[in-house]
Image (cartoon, rainbow, N blue to C red; front, side, top):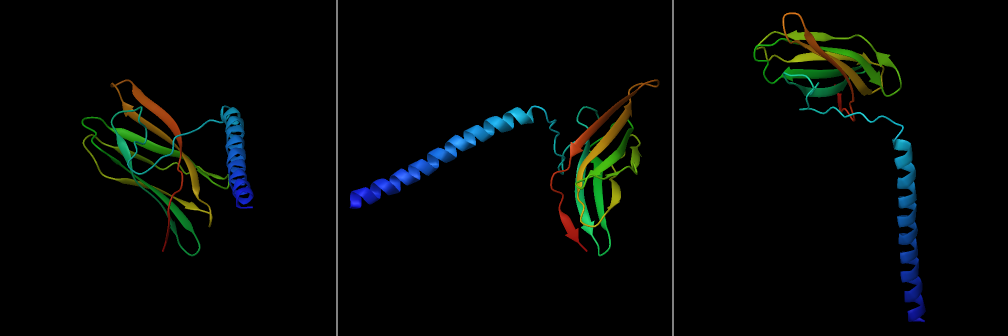
Length: 164
């Protein structure tokens, strides 16, 4: 009787684990085929470069959502590491929310050469909405006649909400 119960217990456990393994393999195969059609964007976190393709480097200093009683405010603070002898302009073209809406107020800031002051762009969000992605345009002069400009859209991941 004990042998039969042990065989049933181990057989059931191995059967469940085997089915889980097979299902996870099949589901992974299906996800791989659907992921090829969806663009994946990088997630912007504190300390990341805003536009890595463009020198000099300006990093994200802080990402926060502040929740008041009647409004939510999203703030993105950027600060350059070092600009040397170049100026640098950053424009936050569009902020997409997780509900599908987009805010296009386009806050912009230009850092003159050697300036390392922080710049904070903020948007008023509908209550309960979180920022999903932001489109950033950055430019810096190359010569007197030309400017390097790069536009990048990044996901914001999970931005912490701070109650006030």
